[in-house]
Length: 213
Image (cartoon, rainbow, N blue to C red; front, top):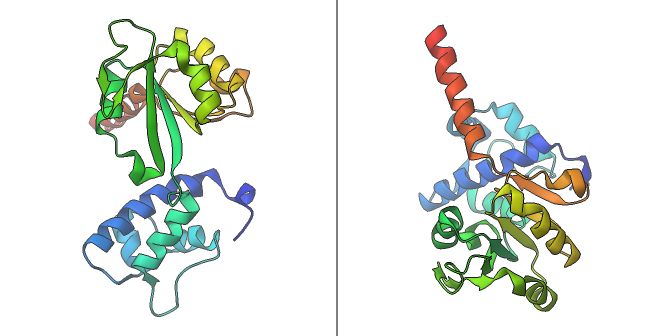
């Protein structure tokens, strides 16, 4: 396998899609799949798929295609889904409650271990399988449990202090819904920013463009 530093971000961004489609094929008891069939399912060219897989050594056999279960397992290992990473969630409002209660974290390589908030009305409530803890206890929790990642479902104005605390506790990976630019202050942090409004604006542009043509 090539050094991960050499892998293009665009290739990495396609890996979860490959994995999802392979999981669907596996559920259908498919034993093998060709790059041509995958290209039809995913809207990519067969050449692009082969190039992407070759970044990790290639998994297919000429004239046979790919073994679905084997390729699914290989991608799970590459994506780090075979060993669960611990996560904490900050912000038990509507979004945080929905994520804590509905998200299947273990299917995507994580285990949600704790939920925190600062609001008296939310502390002590249930968020999925967890009881919301006072965010004041976060440093002690991190010192004891050493979570791998933090999910930020908090307002942007609350994020700087929360991120400072988490970085100080050794947590430097974030699934960030707060709209706070973490990497501007902490360039070495690993951040996946989620802007739901950006997706809608992109959709708005596409709809508007289609109407104009």
